[in-house]
Figure 1 (cartoon, rainbow, N blue to C red):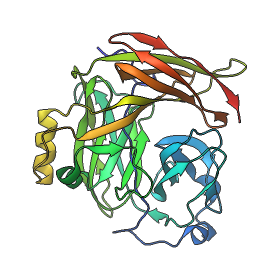
Figure 2 (cartoon, rainbow, N blue to C red):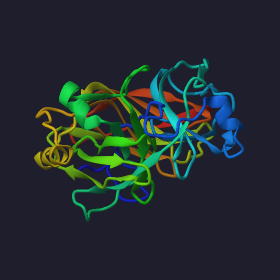
Figure 3 (cartoon, rainbow, N blue to C red):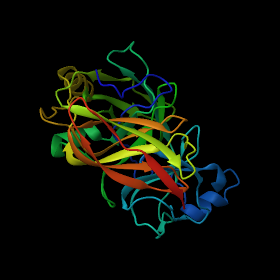
Length: 332
């Protein structure tokens, strides 16, 4: 059994991702950034910024220009949304360069639906799992028929609409705001068969997807263990531990999942891999402790908590082994 997958309240390996490029098809088209926050019902300080689904716990910028100090350079899905409902906001893929700002002023915030559900282990009545990344792709099943596998993260300017988020301490997740239409929702972790569901989000009707990660996939894995603290040694609550993989991870898709999605969508879907993941990640506990299942190999591991500068190290992951990589983060 994969050791880093944990029950409620304890971190687990996660995967995935979820973006919705801002747009308003099927939604009430709303004006650009300035007018959005000029509305008395929209207070920028109430909106959170999410990076690949990870809540930075930082307020949105009133003018739409962001400088996310401490974030490593790379391509990210940036979500600005109003918690806890997650029905208002936007998603955009951006390239972040340390010390440089980026603008979302040209994006159109909107109000839409949400996708909700849970992630369990091994069965529909199995243990609920916290800290799992869930990804939803608009028209994802249709995209699979043309360009499988779907690769994450996407580069800026992508035509793919997707969203990302993590399960909370009760094993539940909420993704939003979601444009109206058809979505393919999935969760995956190294050493487990991924699960995916096809659903629809409509006005007055949210999407729901109960996902199950099944142990016993054929990929050989090991565990990276990390304790993430500040320089004085105090634990950082719920940090992000991520890995940039030496070889992309293509999770197993079971025959039952393939059949279910094909039946509901009415599409003929590919027999090969559905998803290709360049990164895997997990959220740590309130005590800053993280466990991340990874495929065997040498990977770049990063510890991060907003307000601190991300730190990285190389980790050699062996089959069934446990590799310890602790991080002591410096304030920005």
